Amino acid sequence: MVKLKTEREIDEMRAAGRVVARALAAVREAADVGVSPLDLDRVARGVLREAGATSPFLGYRPKFAPVPFPASVCLSVNDAIVHGIPGEHPLQDGDLVSADFGALLGGWAGDAAISFTVGRARPADLRLIETSEAALAAGIAAAVPGNRIGDIAHAIGATCRAAGYGVPDGFGGHGIGRSMHEDPGVPNEGPPGRGMTLRPGLVLAIEPMLIAGGTDDYTCDADGWTLRTVDGSRAAHSEHTVAITADGPRILTAL
View 1 (cartoon, rainbow, N blue to C red):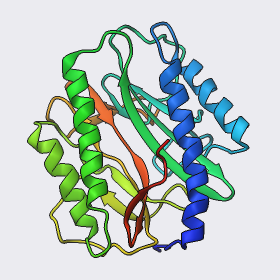
View 2: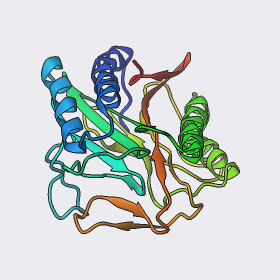
View 3: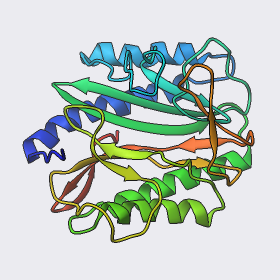
């Protein structure tokens, strides 16, 4: 069921979104050569504690998962696309990191993701990240009343394909509100003019995921969570929680 939010409820969701933005900024600032993803998870948990918020990721177990997710942030490194479990292996010079984080505050959820490099960046990685951010911006620009879900999907997919990148098959964004995942689904590719009509009060997590090698295929690690590119190429992920309003899209997870 699709649940529209009032202006007041969107304001309350913005508070959760600010926590998400602060946590991702803190993770990015702390990330460096020699720092482990597990260290970065501790940084993210600290932001939650300071804000009096909780994690919708920690302990989350959808039907596909063999075990609950054991951390507060997904940290996917290099060829990992999404859902990476933070571990103790230190980050290396030139690593590409995607951080996906959520927060629950006052009964509302926020969800966002960023990608960045550690140490000396590869030009190809910077282009991949830049395109993921451009695809996100294109999707957000299409999130206006009267458009359809397919218009968001088409804007994202067209940006990714024009740059020669793959789009992981079957993955995309989602509605968000009292729960981290609500209806409707938001594909990262598809024909425009299709799907649900966008109305003020709809809040979506829009999240393009890109594969540098151009394939749409992926594999899943033995942990049952981490998705990886089949060709070993790198991946990037960008996401914002966005409210559709009469005045245009409102990003709830910006700093």
